[in-house]
Length: 168
Picture 1: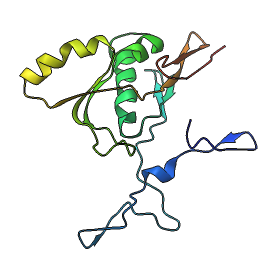
Picture 2: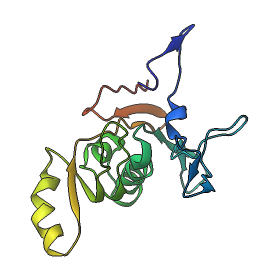
Picture 3: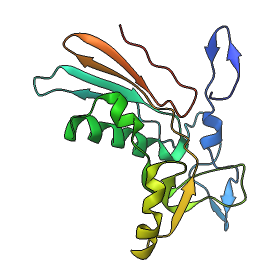
């Protein structure tokens, strides 16, 4: 999706959105202000996971602004620690702690962010009882992965968003 702008078959990203729009706050220069030659702070997390013998096992990445590291980590934990396929790991509901940056709204949801319309919503009362501030939010992940198993490439993608990943 990115910026929605395509030039000669190349889809441009939306990284300008990762800059702070206010260059000065409380009389101090904002570190993430737009300036010539500067790169924005970003949560972009293209990742390669290697096996015990140093062989490539998994490549993955996701859109999703400040939630990107959580989507990528959830998938890696599912594959590496829980022995799930990449698709099974991607299909897990998303729960993470932080702030969902949404420039279209006047308030950014923050606290324990629980994915809407998944079985994770059933846990909200328990999280609240434990004292967590909870926000139920729609998924913004569009994680894609290629899993390498027995020399074959297997694509996996987040089916909750327009997303495709293909292997062999």
